[in-house]
Length: 81
Image 1: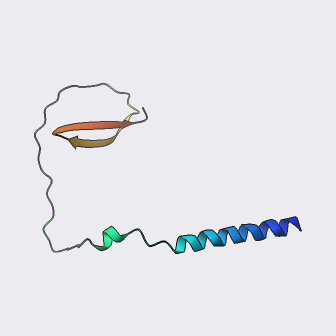
Image 2 (image 1 turned 120 degrees about the vertical axis):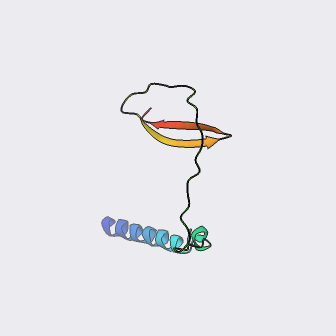
Image 3 (image 1 turned 180 degrees about the vertical axis):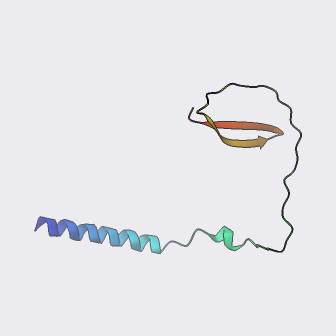
């Protein structure tokens, strides 16, 4: 009898979770307002000048996780550090 009650409680909980998620609006509103045109010219990347300021050795297992240009300076973050 205890097993039947546990299964019933789990089904009720699962139903409540599904119901609560189905009431939320979709989170793709930013994509809906974007216009895509296949006939437009492709975008070109801006060429920037660079200057090596410092070289920092790192292990060969470390990889570049992210690059950011802020205030005219480029920052790198590495993975597995």
